[in-house]
Image (cartoon, rainbow, N blue to C red; front, side):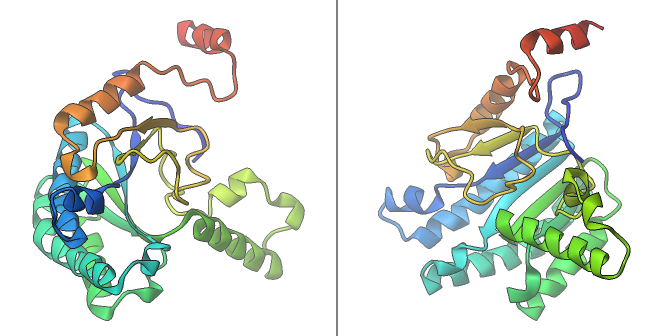
Length: 250
C-alpha cells in the first residue's frame, strides 16, 4: 500500500511490534524461559485491547519468526502449544470485541491441528472491523520478498506481465499485508534495536520506538508512551520539514 498517514488525532493506523524479552524476564526470576512465554501471552492480550481502544486499525505482532525454529526443542514445542491454546482460548474474546484475526507467514511447517485452528479463527472473525490483528508466525521479511518475487516471475512466465513492468508497486502488491497501509509505528521491547527480519519492505518509512521494558512488563503506561512519542514525530517520507509543514497548512 505504500506510505501511510496517521489519522488527525495522531493515532497510527498500523502498529507493528516485536514482542521481545519473555525468556530474559523468566530468567531474571530464576524460572524457565517457557514460563516467560506464558506470561508473554497475558501481555499480548493487554496490548491488543489497549491499541484497539486507542483507535489503531491494524496491529501486527511478530509471534514466531522463521529463525525461531533454531531454538531448543522444548522452547519451540512450548511456543507452538501456546500458539494453539491461545487461539483456542482467545478467539471468542477477540471476535466479541470486533477484532479480525489474520495470519501471515509460511504455514507449511505447522501441524494439521494448528492449521485447522488458524483457518477457523480467520473464518470466524473475517467480517470484524474494529481492528485487524495480523499474527506473523513462521514469518521472515526475506521470505516475504522472495515469495513476492516468485509470484511475479510466474506472471512473467505465463505472459501476464513484462519484466519491465515490475516496479516497487508491483512487488508491494504481492507481499503479505499488501491490502493495508504499511506500519506507521514499529515497536520493539526488550532493549534490542534491530528489525530481526520483520516486515523489512513494509517498515521502510515507519517510525521506530525501542524500549528496554521486557515484553511481559509492557504496560499500558509504556504503550501510551509509544503513542505519545509517535504523535510528536514529523513524518517526511523524504521531503523537507518545510514541505511537510506547507502541505499540512494547505
